[in-house]
Image 1: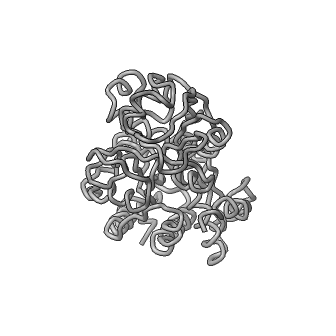
Image 2 (image 1 turned 135 degrees about the horizontal axis):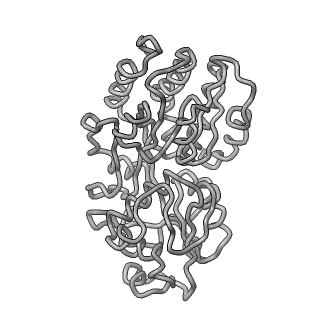
Amino acid sequence: MKKTILAIAVAAAGLLGAAAPVQAAKVINGAGATFPYPVYAKWAWSYNKETGVRLNYQSIGSGGGIKQIKARTVDFGASDAPMKPEELEKFGLMQWPQIMGGVVPVVHIKGIGAGQLRLSAANLADIFLGKITQWDDPRIKANNPGLNLPHQNITVVHRADGSGTTWIFTNYLSKVSQAWKEQVGNAKSVPWPVGLGGKGNEGVAAFVKKVNGSIGYVEYAYALQNHMASVLLQNRAGNFVAPTSANFQAAAAGADWKHAKGYYMVLTDQPGENSWPITGASFILMYKVQDNPAQAREVLKFFDWAFHHGQKIAESLDYVPMPDTVVKMIEQTWKSTLKDKNGHPVWK
């Protein structure tokens, strides 16, 4: 069913497209990360069938989602880059992790398919730094004995917009490469040393598909949707691993959400024999004090439904649902944190 992701998004255009006239408690408005868009689209379609409530979600990138929630133009924002506790406090926001998944380097090299090319962490960083410029560079060949690598220029493709996917990707590169940390850093938007920019996961995927010799990074569902060649990436344990739901789960297994203040958690470069090294969570942002508590409850009902009834949908698209213990913590946080103007809980 993975090939239907795009079809689902198109079929759900009425749910996720341009904003319609809002009727209270009938339309939920959100904006932000493209990373979770495929699963949000399918959740929205299923939830609308069950309840009649529509989700209008603008897949504009994490930076845009944070801007819109700060401007109070949406009911919730979505970001793959978690806001730090002090930032949440400053703006009166709360956040929680809604779903987990993986960011995946993808390549377009004629004759090389998914899972055939191996890249070490150092080589991946040096490619995006512009230090490795040919696919048959000896450093890449050393990890790929027997693979027929062409003498071809490498075209780097990156995000052009402020992006949580970029935040996760550059967070990983900053952990595994001192040069990357010092020269480029970790942010939703960075000064890329080389490459072409595409807007959204969709734009990066489209560029990589078009340009022979290219490499980019996208959320895993987009790699599947576009039949792209993902790489085997060397993890912290030294093993070359594939991007799979099981390996995303392996990376997330040690996450201590209980002690993560404001649910601030970064899942890149985690220990574990099978851990996918560029794993991340996607977060929802809402104001602690709600001007329209009835509308806020509709938002929470949707995400509560997703937690309890959307797991199979998420898994079918190779996302990792939040563990039940974490879901219970999140719902308790809703009760204790989200209030109306009179201090009454929004969620009971």
